[in-house]
Structures are given as structure tokens and as C-alpha cells.
Image 1 (spheres, rainbow, N blue to C red):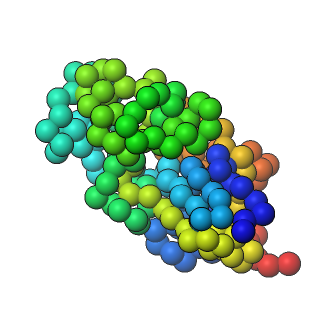
Image 2: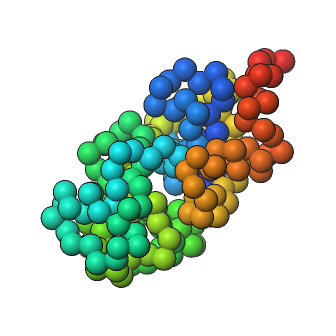
Image 3: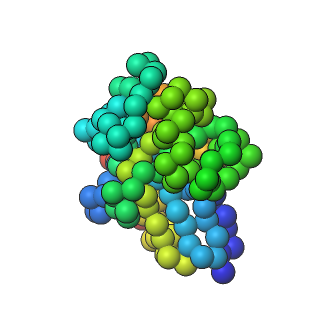
Length: 186
């Protein structure tokens, strides 16, 4: 059983992360318990916009202001499935309440609402997610694969993707570029 709960925390990939799916990533943990962990990579936009995704799903979009919003690579699991991280939690068909203010929804009804201009105030849409089996994330942490820090909503929703990793590092008082030069084991 997990003795730590990293729900609503960022995982910051250490510079020596060899896995190409997670190299230089910032991952937001949506759920962490004795069954494992589920997270979304939040700093890796893909070559798709919200309007293109909705068009692929045959859903209209009425709000031109959000049509160009990027879609993100959320992780290597179920990359053909959409995951919407949003605030507020709302009342959607399939939502995991990450915390009181943030939800993760996988049902199409949220995208239909977004298309109508009735979606959540703030959101981030990914294709795929990152998953860990029971004890796997704890094992990776013990091998120094990740740094962890409590997540800040503003980093998720209010700053550009390329600034999210450095901003999360600043929460720890670290500079990612300097960490790369000094990474090693004590």
C-alpha cells in the first residue's frame, strides 16, 4: 500500500530520464492510491488544435477564441482517447474529482459543451494518459526518476506549455537548466 499520496502534485522528469515519452516532461498526478497512479503530461502540445479534435468528433465549435487551443500528449496509454482536465469540476458523465476545484473528464459530453461555448472556465485537453501500477511510481521515485512538488492551478491553466516545466521547478527553488549540469547521485 502506498504511504504517500501524490494526487494534485507535479512529477518533474529528472534530466537523466531516458524514456522518450517522459523526457523533459511535467506530469500532473490526477489520482494516486494503492491501486496505482494516473497522470497527464501537461507540457507537450501536439500538432492538433481543439477545433481539429472537435471536427474529428463531428462536433461544432461556436467559440473562435478557444478553437486554436492546443491538444496535449497526455501520456502513452490510450492515446486515441481524450482526457479533459478542467476547472471547475462541474457535472459531467465521467468525471474524477482530482480535488474540490479540478476534475478530469473522459466523457464526450464535456467536449459537446465546449463546442457550444458552455464548457468549463479553464481546461487542458490531452490524448492519452500516463499510468503506473501499484508501487511502480514509488519505485521510480526511489530511483530518482522524478522530483515532486505540489501542483499550482495557475501552472496548469494560465501559462504557456513551454513555461510550465521551468515554473514547476521554481516552486522547488531550482533552475532546470542548472539541474541538468549538476544531476548525479550523492
